[in-house]
Image 1 (spheres, rainbow, N blue to C red):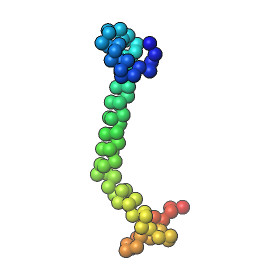
Image 2: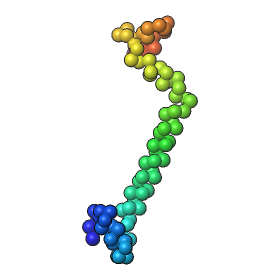
Image 3: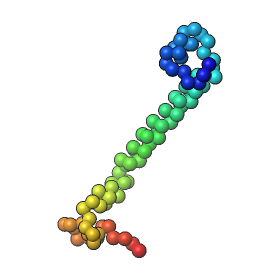
Image 4: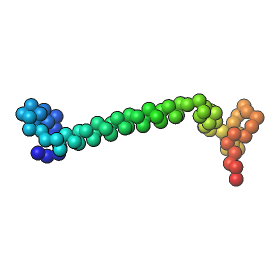
Length: 84
């Protein structure tokens, strides 16, 4: 049997009882990969929305407002100056 089973052929082989364990291993790997990606996504979401990053996000949100001099209009400081 080929590795590229469609849903219809997979269901037929399951109903017939001749689906080998080797063919279902790919589905197990796909399921584990899906769970790993979901956990990674949730971890990145929690990291991005943590309170520790609030000040950095505030500074980065003002970048589009900077003028060519690196000064944000309406503020007294220079938020975007290069430190070279």
